[in-house]
Length: 85
Image (cartoon, rainbow, N blue to C red; front, side, top):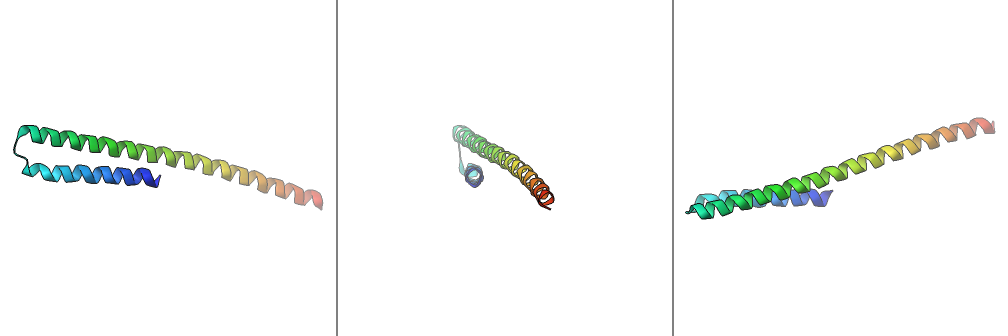
């Protein structure tokens, strides 16, 4: 998850750097190339964020499963204590 967020940050930083350098470009072709690079950076950042969101969802589901298992174990513990008395 951290790797995906770092990748998103790096791609965003690169896109912003390219955007800042557009001011120094003189031709339409160079501007178009810069725009394409910015769009690539944005797509890369979006992809990384989507991967991070998927990982977060997986971890949330795993947490819920573990919590349910813990509740069941606690219930069994209570049953065994009552039965032992």
